[in-house]
Length: 299
Figure 1 (spheres, rainbow, N blue to C red):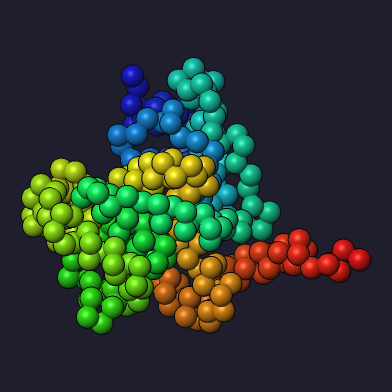
Figure 2 (cartoon, rainbow, N blue to C red):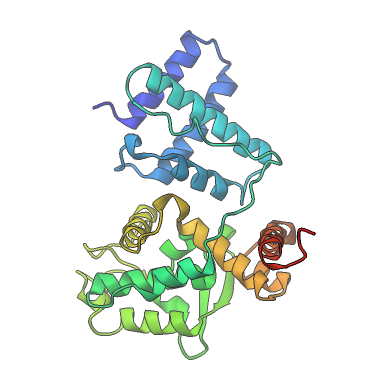
């Protein structure tokens, strides 16, 4: 089977010879494709990529890139998948039904609060993996941390006495986020007897979340945890990801009256303009609820 690296090389050659694209254009396309492959993971088949996966990836890009850069990334991926389908290397083009944002950024799609409650409250606690997964999902929702920040989280970053977590974000900037009651219980359960200590080599490194081999849990590993737990809870896999937990945390806090600057600090946004998108989501939810519930909303 042709590897993704070989498929990228074939595409680059086709762009050069058949399409006559400039070197600068080709290098930009190549960077976009390689960035997605790094996010997707080297061991996951390209045939498994869905439209939902692509939308989650683009939503993450929108947190850090300009709208024009995100649009170009989508264009690069569409061109590549179109080439692979045309060459018979893939059967389905997952980018075909991805809708670009009219304003360069789509509104986040948070999970309903009842869906989050269903997922977290029905997680079993019998095995070390159960306890790890419960602590992981509670942390993603409870702190709104980026998946890269969760991957790098170390045991020494947890302060149970002060109920604070030290999160290291972009540019190695650190911030303190609260440790809510549910999260504190889940973390203590995981870090106590019958949890993390049951994994191989639990003290070989300082990472909080470890995989079944005792190594640090990767971004791809977190994706698999979310997918399997969503499936077990009867939740549509395409509607949930680590980034959706971040969206949900911010939106639900604003819905319940949190100050936007508090949410900005919690999420580690450099600019409040990035946080304001969640305000729009909260208002949209309020308008929908009003329209559905108020007896004179349609008079």
